Image 1 (cartoon, one colour):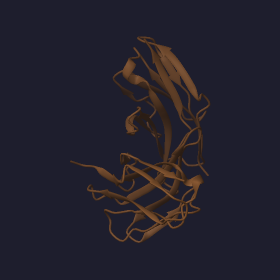
Image 2: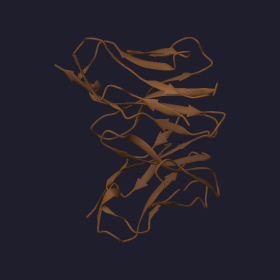
Image 3: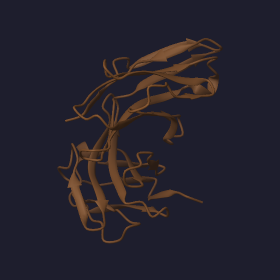
Image 4: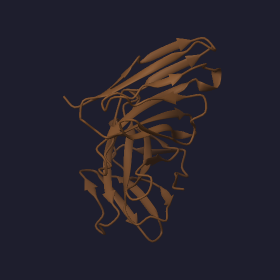
Length: 115
Length: 112
């Protein structure tokens, strides 16, 4: 079974600084997607960034980038130039394309950006 | 506008009183799923469906039922709610094989 582990329940960062959120996963599959979702206080689930497992190049979306290490099964999120609006819960998620075709989540990291 | 709609957004009910949380999507997605979110536990999957009349258990299906009679709707049924089902619930949908999921606004359920 697939598992997604986020070992940092809470983190904080000064405004304008850079922070990295960690995520590891376990799977025997070769074809899958990885995601980071953001959940602000409004509770809405917002897709931040996605990575296809077959792509070696790390995904980037503006201030958000990932460090995808397939062999190590690691998928960390880097937020550069942190802004107050980045304060939220962040969930790492795994989608299995070839097995259950299902979406699994980690336990989340609560990020606080300090002014 | 492409969206997943959940109703109600908030619900307070009593133990044992049957309830249904509705979920509807307008994107013709094959995949739909229900999750519950609890502090420190992330989003845990309750049930999911790959298409009409096809449903399967997730990680925490006990105490819940679902049905998928139409492609757009995937209601979550609690036949006899208990206080340990107090949680935040999310419905999600996605196109089959394409992993980006769209989420509903969430339903905050309190069972007293």
